[in-house]
Image 1 (cartoon, rainbow over the protein chains, first blue to last red):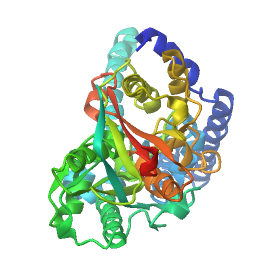
Image 2 (cartoon, one colour):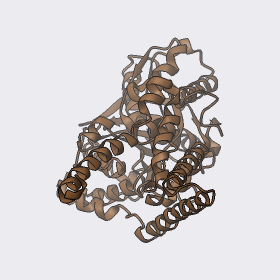
Image 3 (cartoon, rainbow over the protein chains, first blue to last red):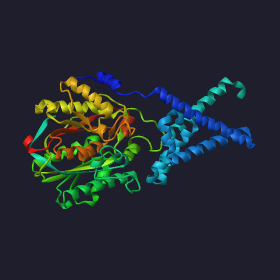
Image 4 (cartoon, rainbow over the protein chains, first blue to last red):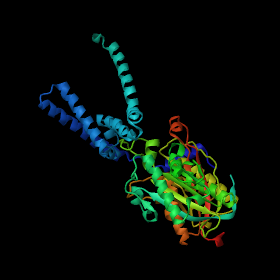
Length: 149
Length: 333
């Protein structure tokens, strides 16, 4: 072969099409923003039903998670995500999708070794490092805001 | 690596292939023996579906050639599932001596080349070879669950849902396998598992170059040089590199670029999988050779020999390409 690894790496970069950044960003903005608007509408709805502020927030999150799980089951969430990318990944609905999709997928391996063991295969790292990050945040807050002690 | 000139050309006397829903909507649909709109093929899991697909293909082959399974001397085959279970499980109902082979997406030409040597050498009288892949078994093993909301990168190829078989015999009216060339492992440091074409292209170049140097043949002597599943990116790279090696390819066709209508079926980077080259061979190439539209071709499937573990350990992707020369008539030998 008359080619080195470095030369080949450059050739591959040139030959590989790039992601259409502008279109991807637009999709992510519109769909992600749409999900957030839906969250706001749900929040308003629950406030109107006389839930207290913190409960209304919680209820709208739970509703979004429920909707995401439902639409993942129908196969619609994945189809939307193929276009929306980060727009469906970042909101709480993306997290629900990351738990429900492996749970569905690994049903064929049984309820314990399949669904139970594989359910957090994607969301697991998010939970682990999310909890870890919040611990670090708590410790920092403890020191920089003395009046919280 | 060297070119093995088969003293006695091996006849390809029957072929068959089975595909799924996307293949049914593709341009080569007419060449398939069976196409299912249900990618489950009536089964309970994707793995069972892939096994079922292989069995349909095998049954079709046996019926076409009016064979009795007992008369088959050896079967060589493989797929992409861990421990190549789709293939092993497909043969458990048959009394055929079986050897599983793993060559990733190079499996079709790997099994063909091996079986051709066995048949030509007189070790066996006939052999059935085959390969399969299933989009859903591959996705769940190598990537993410099917309903997970992820975006495919523009270089990611689409795994073909298909199984193909070819029957090789000492005597027959052809087409004939006349030369084979087993590839060596080549790795130019690609680590992106979503850019398989780029990982495999150097292996294709290595095998083709060796073949042209040692056989004395030139690319223009062939009606077409088929590669397995380099896709859009890999095909571009192959052309550029072959030019540098001094063997420009003008008649190159990549199976991964013809099995789907890339634009209409939304697979911009093309197709991949063991079933890709196998199905294009059985649905398109061999029928056209039998009809006299193609006289002489090279068929070379390429495989990326990675696993999910090696990808997670940040290893680069070693690849391999095996080649067979197929001619339509004995007069062209």
